[in-house]
Length: 533
Image (cartoon, rainbow, N blue to C red; front, side, top):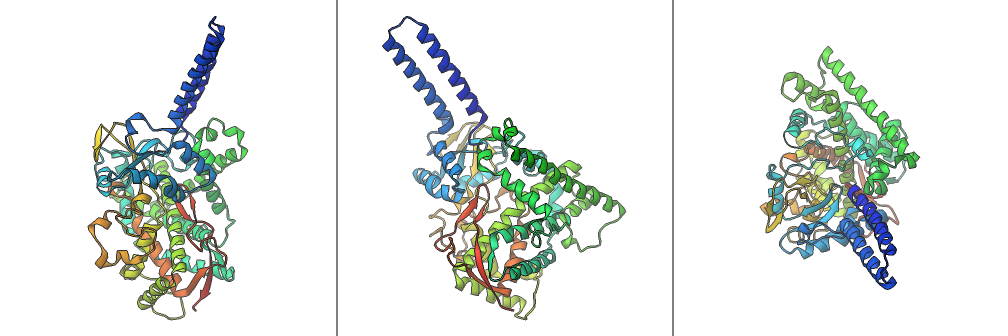
């Protein structure tokens, strides 16, 4: 975390040493002026050492541009998102690195080297033996975040252990393409939009849509988040998610572990987490019992992930997971697939509202493929994949305002050169997706929304290696295809049904305003919808 337990220990030790020093010097018979000078110098030295541990990277990494951690802490507590911090803090550090494409700052696992050079990223992502996934990549201790991102799971296991989880989930993700589930949820979204008259806060509505989508596709349970924002499932999950990334507890994990009793609301959230986990445990137990009685006759593409994983396990195709491991992976899929897709969709709605020509071009394509009759049409998998402009819009949204700002940390297994810099063994390395996808040398006018970047004639190997919204290498997001299917279905159906614009007085009029920490998306995005049929 940004303020590590070791830093607190150093502060405690330094304070003790200062007291001892004062006591020893003041008891001596030295000249009073000398006593003051010696004590003052010693105090200044110790305080500097404390400052250096908290604010500055290890000496071995100071040859790279770095960001003072006190500035990161201050801007995080002030509420700045990674989107804002990148522009103010990280981009200037990268500018100092010239061709290196690396800078150093403190992350949730301590000081990390952040990489945005495509060639170096390729080495980090593909050489798993040199850059294995970091242990405790979400921090250590009994924090709310670690209670949700549970270990062992596909998000936390390194090396060979991770392969077991990937083998268990891969067959399910390859088979699952529940476009009909997504399409019926979009129809629920239509009902919710029309209940809100003209102006709709789309960010929150899409979060609820995303929750229904991931629970329905994950374990065949529609939480009805779209229809009932106050449902128990929605309230539980939203409170837990917001609590896990609360800046104070995210920055100072001791408040969430050792001193949790001082925060009654925090104690309640940990109790709520047990209830949330219990609900998913009950579903897994029922699913296993159902499988013993016979397989579901639902079309395989529309089956939920939990069922497909259990069936693959029974066939010997996937790895065998314990109930706890399956539980942890399902929660990981919810966390990884909910906010990310919902925020990506919110960003797409924003950019389509800002540029009516792009919105109309997308609408014309949807009508070409799905027709212009006055009724809802759910696209097939083949139709959704075949719409070129729809896929260009989605890819550009994920580039310019992708929800994932960086990858999980890797740890250098041995002293290794990365570019022209020697990274000591044990150094943490993170791929900075936000920096990579806003590099003006790779993406001219990087903050401009331009789907034509992804037109077939504009594709190049240079940009292909610089688009990583789902990460890359063997740890690339397992749910990428499902997320893309969800986005294709929703956007194609929405653009046939409605035209939309930013609400009057929107804070997003001049530029997109983001919220979030590790995952970002538009904040309180209000849109005005006009029905076409």
